[in-house]
Amino acid sequence: MKYLISGGGTGGHIFPAVSIANALCELDKDADILFVGALGRMEMERVPEAGYRIVGLPIRGFNRSQPWKNFSVLIDLARSLRLAKKIVREFRPDVAIGVGGYASGAAMKAAAWAHIPVLLQEQNGFAGVTNKLLRNDAVKICVAYPHMERFFPEDKIILTGNPVRANLTQGSPEAACTFFNDKFGVSFTTDRPTLLIIGGSLGARTINESILQELPRLLDAGIQIVWQTGKTYYDKCAEQARSLASGQNADAAIHSRLVVTAFLNNMPDAYALADVVISRAGASSISELCLLGKASVLVPSPNVAEDHQTHNAMALVSQNAAFLVKDADAPLRLVPTALRLLENKDQCAALRKNILALAQPDSARRIAQEVLALIKE
Image (cartoon, rainbow, N blue to C red; front, side, top):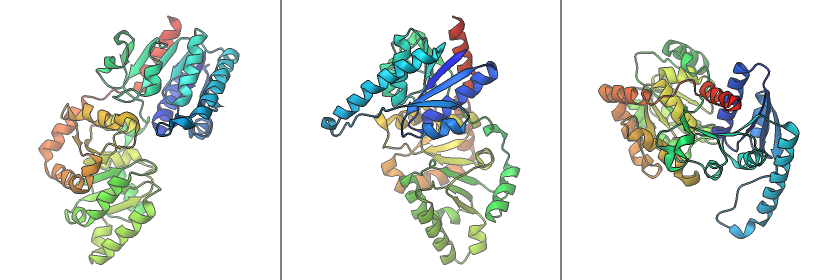
């Protein structure tokens, strides 16, 4: 069978797409998979790294603030649609899978025009523009949140959740302590409360600045801190953290409880050790927190289309499964909220129980099974 998969622009689109491809290969050993992405976007590197072929379209988003500049965007859209039709005609897929992003719109439209069955996967609690535009072309729409009938036809919706990293549940607190102690020279233990702060590969400015200004308070609380700053903010955060530590005459004690790193390449163990997680509210992060049952303080990014991270977070908050701190309120509220949660074991336990109830395990495999069922139908 031949599978056309399209989407990208951000890791939140690329990771589910690759996970679905991997699951298809497990279920169909002879699967022939072709990705369609947008030229110049990260999928053109990440998809080949995952071992799959990809073709790029010259497509890009509309300039909403300066609409008079969109003439060339419309030209590229027309070129992309023609190229997508050519790709579909030559590859002749049995099914097309769209996960959102500019390229997905052109590729799925071309597939629908060729009478190829289309399956969409929507990661967020507030549907993206591309998937909303494609809702009438799709036969099935796999979603991560309930109550998505406000965006899509109810009879097409299947609640599957979002794919997460396959090894995410395999970490352990003991392995985490060994990893951090050996790599960073700290003295982590499993009997001390641990705060995990994550802001994505590039980092989250508001989260990092809020942690920086309250770092002495966090360290005085006697907790262990794993702080992933992202590469954009690492130098500044690491330098100020060192300055604060040396200025408080507790180099061994403070440094032994603080890890500052640009990237975390051992997320399974980091999650396993964490009692409370501070995070943005991207779809992938939310799905990971649900699957692992983590007590969380979410700070939705205000810089995303249609404020979908707030919608993602509110889906948890409404079920008493997480706390939300607005980006604008983070400098004053983020650290106090996290510390109160760390101190309240009953509240932590309640959040863990409630967020775990929202988990959708084996999402990639379930989506792949829907794809195969679609071909059979």
